[in-house]
Every structure is written in C-alpha cells, then in structure tokens.
Image 1 (cartoon, rainbow, N blue to C red):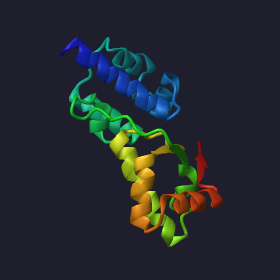
Image 2: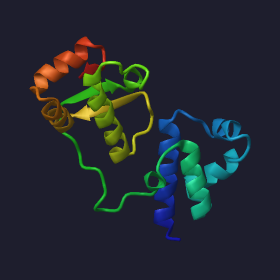
Image 3: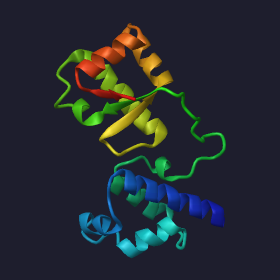
Length: 159
C-alpha cells in the first residue's frame, strides 16, 4: 500500500474518531475490547495497514459509511465555502425534537450535508452561505427570513 495513502487513511480514521469525541481508550472500552486502542492508534498513524474487513468493521463501529473513512481523491476533495457561516444545532433536530413538519426538510437537508462532508460529530453543523440559499429555496423563502426563523427557534448561532 502507498505510504501517502496509508497516512491519509489514518488521518481520516483519526478525524472521524475525534469528531465523535472519542479517545483511543474510549474506542476500546465502548467496543468491549474488539478495537484495541494500540491497534486503532497504529491505523491512525499509518504504521499498520488496515484490511478491508477491518475498515468495514470500524465504519460500522463509528456509524459512518465506509467510504467516509477513505481519503478523498483530487476530484472529491471538499471545496472551500463562502464567508458567511451559520452553526446549526443538530441536537435540536433529532427526530424526537422535530414535531414541526416545516423542520423535517431541514433535518433531512442537514443529514445530507453531514454525509457529503463526512462530518459526523452529531452536535453541530456549519452551514455555508450556499447551503442557506439552497435550503431557503427548498422552503420557499428568502435566506434572511429563514435565518431569522431558525434563530428565533434557537436552532442556529449566526456568526
């Protein structure tokens, strides 16, 4: 395996683990020892090659698609966003919290952005200006109206 690719794969593994707020020891503890901290650390440093089966198992453990653990190729690398950012509180968009049918498209949209960006921390999501415009278009309102409504509901922190 190419050392650069193995290093990038390790960086992705570390990023996903850290997005979920887990230490290596917590990975071992929560997996009941299936994933040893020293082994996962070796994968993350690129010191040890990970088999496809082990990679699929880690993806299941982290609750992410296996493709999210793979380093992006040049064509898949995320593009830089605009200047205006809005932080969406994902904890307020959990199915148990979304009783307003108007918020259901927002929850689905946020979920699709998480998958697209490989951002699985589950607590917050930064919406770029293009995201806000697209969501406003889906909901049939101006971006400013959408932001005001979301801020009133306590769902965002505009920066």
